[in-house]
Length: 301
Ligand SMILES: Nc1ncnc2c1ncn2[C@@H]1O[C@H](COP(=O)(O)OP(=O)(O)OP(=O)(O)O)[C@@H](O)[C@H]1O
Ligand SMILES: [Mg+2]
Image (cartoon, rainbow, N blue to C red; front, side, top):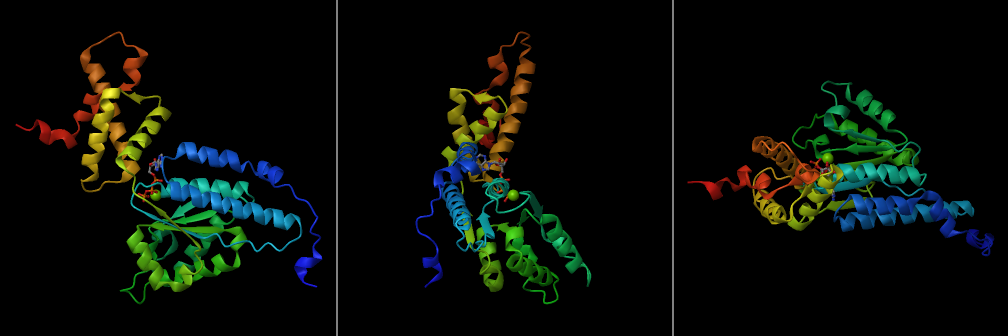
């Protein structure tokens, strides 16, 4: 008789009540509200949540639960939400009981790799110790590996990471993050690592419309709004900003808003208007964006 037949098929388990216990729906709803766009990313999170929930149900019926490897790769341009989603992911994995603590530890090469012989192993091990029970987020992970330098200590750090990723799966989830092209090269040069990272999630660049929505959401959080006339100006601003160097998606949006708030404050202050309404204080007007450097060429001459 196979192992499976040994298990009584009529044992009942209530998916709905298990689901409600994890409060996973609340978290997914919140995720939907907090993050604009990112549909592929949200879908992947939903899939992981489903997998873990089913795994829990299987465990409760005495079926083998294999503790799926959940190490991940987040690729995408600057400001596309990788760090933000990693934080949410840590919370979700914690609430689903996959990890014990649910904290996120963000590190880069310098935190893992030493300058001198014998320094790397203790550094990497210390980081791993701190990350245990949570998520270790390795930002710009490709810097760990320097192909032109044979004696680079990065390889030593990767070796230790790999061992822990394999042997202590249920204590730690590692997320490798960085730009897509560089990450692809990084995995090509480290096949051992690539095969242990099972979830590859790519964060697409935002469209101008999504960036506008992101900006409005950020403003709403700060109890500000943009006037209807300003909205078209902001879209125009975004389209121009995207073509400029160092554009960083949602982060550029946040910076634009911060500067517009500064201009609004100056505008109100300079107007000498002593009696202000609530609307005056919360509204960013078209001119608060039009005074940006981005529009300077319009007013040249
Ligand atoms: N989809 C989104 N909806 C709302 N806000 C967002 C979204 N994506 C990013 N943000 C906001 O934009 C800012 C930048 O996001 P984040 O730091 O997560 O990007 P990142 O991909 O980690 O960037 P980098 O590669 O430069 O580290 C944060 O303030 C975040 O809250
Ligand atoms: Mg980041």
